Every structure is written in C-alpha cells, then in structure tokens.
Length: 365
Image (spheres, rainbow, N blue to C red):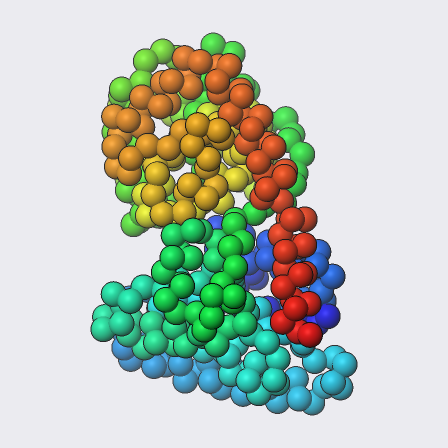
C-alpha cells in the first residue's frame, strides 16, 4: 500500500535534530513496518512561532500552491502508483495541515493524523487561522492517533466520531548498548539529561534542575548531552558545581546510545514537555527516570515502576526522588529492568506497526 507522509511542524529531512524530527522518522519506519511503501509527500513547513497574521496567510497561500502541485503530480500517475492513504504527523494551531486534507479530498483517499492537539483557548488568539485549520483537519481525519491520554481528552471534542480517535502511545526502535567514550565513574552516581540548549521550556527545565542539585548528598556528577544557543547561560546556571558537571555537547546517535548505557539515573524536570522521547531512550537503556509529572510524561514514565514522578516545579520533591534512587541501587536497578521490559513489550516499533497496519487496512477498505 502506497502512503503519502507529511509533517507540517518539521520535516523528517530537516537538518536540525529534535524530538519532533525523530518522531516523524519513527512514524515513517512504523508505516514501512506495517508493509506500506512510504513517500515523503512534501517538506513544506507550516510552522509559525510568532503568531503573525500576515505570516500565517503567507504560509496558507504557499501551502495551497504546494497542494495543487501535488494533486497534479499524483493524478498524472497510473492509478496503481498513487497513494492509497495520506498520513500527517503533528498537527496543531502553530503548525496546521493545509495540504493533507486538500490532497486527500482531491484523490478520494483516507486522511489520517498522528499527534494532533486541540486547544480551544486559541480559537480567538493570534493563531486563530491555524487553530481553525487544525480543527478542520482533525474533524476530517478517518483516524486521529493521539500519543498522550491528555491529548485524547481534548481531541474527543474535535473528532468526527469516537471511533476515529485511537490511543497510540509514544514508541521507539530497539538498539544495542555500546561502550561509552567517557569513563564510567566507579565512586559516584552518574546522573544524565539529554536536551537541546535553547530558550523556553528547555531552559526552564535546566534552571529547575540547577535548583535541585544543591539538595543532593553523596558523590554524584551530572552528564549533560546537548548544545545550542543558550549553552553559556546554562553553564552559568551550574557554575557552582564545577567538576560535578560534564558537558558532552551534541552527540550522534551511537554516542548518545553509549552515554545512556554508562549513566545510572536519568533526570529531567520536563517543564512544558509534550512527553519526551529521551525518557523512552533512557528506559530502553535500563535507566530509572526522575521526572516532573505533567502533560504526557506519565505516558512514557510509569510512576514507581520505570521511574519516579514528582509534582511539576517542585524541586524539593525532585531532589528527594533522585536521592532515593542514589541511596537504593537495588530499587534503581529494578526500575531500570522494568523500563527495558516496558519499551520492549509496550512501546516498540513492531507493536506500533501492527496497530497502524490494522487501522490502515480498515480505513482503506
């Protein structure tokens, strides 16, 4: 089955790594695992960060041109070569899908979305046009795969029927753990966080983490994987800790996998996170997690099983949970092993492919 794939927020071919790009690539892999021939329909980016009406109108106009071009290209193909379904990843008011619904209607093929967000408070805001377009796309979709239970509650107000709303939790591919290029500390606990060093939610999580560290007792060090325009400011946040902080910079996939294998506990406050792919990466490597309990984090970190969740913004509780795992290696190891099982059995690429295959066959038939 031929499937056209599109990600209006960030193309899977975008040069800058991020969790969004990662998930787009994972969905393409999952669709291929479902037996589909997957083609990236367009790399057109519909993202508007600032909320400028004129810019949104420019995006809408350019997207309409792109959609018309795609329809012409597909209609010129033999019927057997055309896509049988359209699959869009990540739709919300700042990155609506102006293309997929248009092409799907023109070709008379089912339209599907994974990871959509519906926020009625944006109906009259700066992204009103994007909100309307996203809401219309959600209502037209034959399947809306929501990745967090919180999103599912909001989307239930926007879908055309309850049957079109399907829970598809965040997932990850399997990978082996390699030896690290850094020496594992034998006398201290290695804490790890992996995040881009940018403004906004990421910076706030770094700030919160810096608030928690002074409360820790014993021997520890924090490994920070990631880089970005806020690195100097983030280094200032941790300036009091001197040799307890190890800055690893931006790592490639193999290096990052190795670092997960060398650390002891994954720590991240998760301020503003949708869910956080790094939590699944940590669990896959057998790392227990300490994270803030907000938004979609409980969909990827199971409290008291694969890690410990703390009230959002409560850095006293956050530090206490880190200390608990530092002081009880057996508990940490048990949670790490449960994390491996959780990813292998409940959050695998193979399980996602099977779910997608079943729904694709149903909507296409």
